[in-house]
Amino acid sequence: MHPVTRTNRFVGLAVVAVLAVSVAACTRSKNDVSTGDSSTTTASTPVGSGGGGEAGPGDFGTLKGVCGPAPSGEKNGTPDTQGVTADAIKVGAVSDPGFAGRPGLNQEMFDASTVFTKWCNDAGGINGRKLDLTLRDAALTEYKQRVTESCAEDFALVGGGAVFDDTGQLERLQCMLPSIPAFVVTSQARGADLQVQPLPNALDSTSDAAMVYVKKKFPDSIDHVGYMTGNVPATVTVDKQLQEAGKQLGFKNVYQAQYNAAGETSWTPFAQALQSKKVQGLVWTGEPENLVLLLKALGDIGYSLKWVTAAANHYDQRLIDLGGSAIKNVYMQSAFVPFFQADKNPPTQQYLDLFKKYLPKGKAEALLALQSFSAWLLFATSAKKCGADLTRKCMYDNAKSVTKWTGGGLHAETNPKSNEAPECTTLLEATPQGFKIPDDFKLTNGFFDCNPKYVAHLTGNYGKGTTLADAGKTLADLK
Image 1: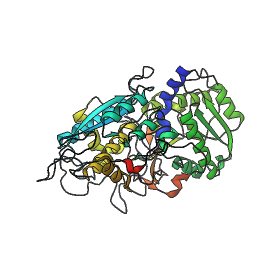
Image 2: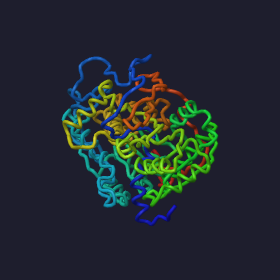
Image 3: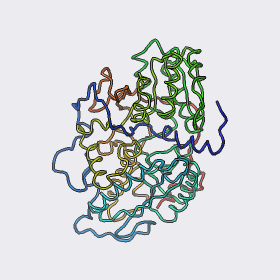
Image 4: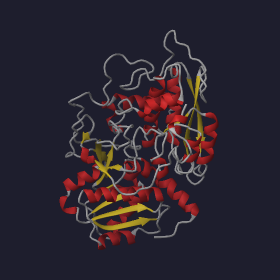
């Protein structure tokens, strides 16, 4: 393993940041193979059911009237709330596409934010108030500056996220700026106050559905499990959480390593170490390119693993294109309906259609775009309930009270109030031909299987979120 300079550390974080934040999502994949049980029959209403009736211009999936004009006879005033006028709501979204080391980094969140606001404004805005969106580019190292600017102008931050999101949390809380992010990365942000996550990425729980699956499928392998992660703080934390989850499942940890997130000159030493330790299953935290290089190095020395689990960011066509025949028994869980099932799930198809209409060259098939869109839907429905008297407190209280959330049918049910990982998931297997749902993974609830065992409740110390108390504030200061 090689030392990481500050410049390489930035590149490494840019490469693997998504890992720490994708509790459950799926990235782009255009040549998928769908097999196994893809039935949408459920004991209750399927996640993507339209719910009956003709869709209106401001409806999305199962959510009716997300956006639209003010109710008849109701007139918006100009409340004493920053960023709100009688006819507009000023909202910011943060991402890192301007980072010179990885141009376009997480651009998909800006794309999703743009698509949502255009669609919502065409439908009439939120109770007649149009969304005035500012895309705030943190360029990896300027998150604190963008938050400070947002503090002076915006009603809220919505649908974004940044790699170094620890640097601006204190400032955000000092100015009482609510946030409904697409994702959060660092411990300080994952546990921060005045924030509602539509797809929770908590410090005290994690999704472990893929690990539960491989334990059942390969029971003889769990006495020889290895863990690998990039050597950056955010993913090291995720790796430690997964090690605790594995221990709860009875996995015996025989090997653990951190690799250079900015790239290794050779992966052969890692492959040889896995062979020497007789590792049979690998819990991997990284990105597709590096996993491919490791699997090819294993092939070069004639050693194979029984299974690999990876985060949902590996639902990416690059894994298939680069890995080819080296890809075998690689599994990942996702709380989103896969794109290859869009023809069976109207909300997923509607989401793709909105991109085609409002931003045809935008990055639609990306995990963070989906998460961003869900965040915008949560914001809009919460703000709408406030009616003409829109305040930060009203919007935040409404969002924080939500206990059942599917993004209108884009994903499995989550609980933003409790901020726990979802119990419902689908499982994807990567093969040389593409992605599929394994034949032996049964979907018992629409597009998902639901099981409390898919959430590991953690007791380890994985850091602390920034609190209102840290900022010298209380919820009473939210107006």
